[in-house]
Length: 394
Image 1 (tube, one colour):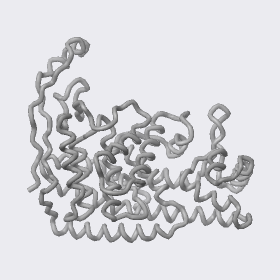
Image 2: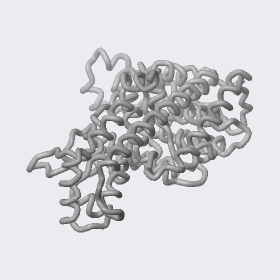
Image 3: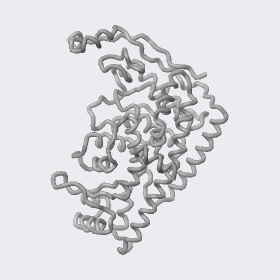
Image 4: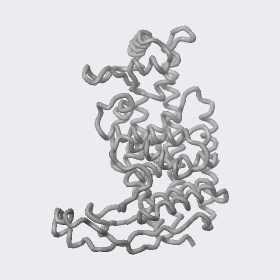
């Protein structure tokens, strides 16, 4: 049996002056103590998965391996495209939304809505996770979190204060869940890291349990959900389930977000099957979404190639792959990444606009930027709930 979390009584102290600012109706509910979770140590726990679910996991892992192998042969970077969809979906689970275009623009300019900057941080964190190698350590978790929260004023590293979910902003007394006290976080993460190194658990099941335990620990002051979903990709890569690509796992979770949240909650009571099944479902859908995106992008790139009559070796033949990685660009970005002069880049942009590959956005105040509308449309559909359902039923 997987143990449920227990609770310990902790002291809640507030400065009398700050208490005076809190409404009386709220102040009455603030007690001198509160109950904080004490997560079970899981590094050496036996993991028992029902036979039917174990069979589904094995089938999903085969599908993941096939998808991964197929992406290794592409001449363009599918992971760069999918991480945008993944980052948008993960942020939507936290009710943080912005257009794919604005998120891509946020990587070149800070003159965009604040949500776009935050989601761009998620894109950067995903990149950081993909670039990392080796086992997951506390430092690697913190590095991902630091990249994610770059455009905020949140504290970095494991928290040194109490956090809670739901309830009142003034104290944890009415919260729906109170994660462990700050002085337990390091030990909990050490245990989690040890669990992540195990080789006796199917990778998908291990990733699901690692994720649920991470969310239970809630090691940071903010960004735990997005960091935790980013770590799902690190787990799958570390266990060599996905070697060449990534998948829009959060799109699968977003498709049935209530089930996902319920699975995380019942994990606290020692029920591990729901979160394992939830991730298995999400990965099944993520393979479908990933394959659809890859097919749609292939069609777009093929149509661009047919319109390209330039000589072999021209920078115009390298532009499409660059746009897959960064679907919003400016002249300086193209010049820098294709290794050409600003003048050549301007000419290339003009030709791409004539061929319908790029279109101009922005204004004199913000600067001249150009978007690959066809690619953005594919990403936009794969980054919202209605679009995900359309893709799944095609």
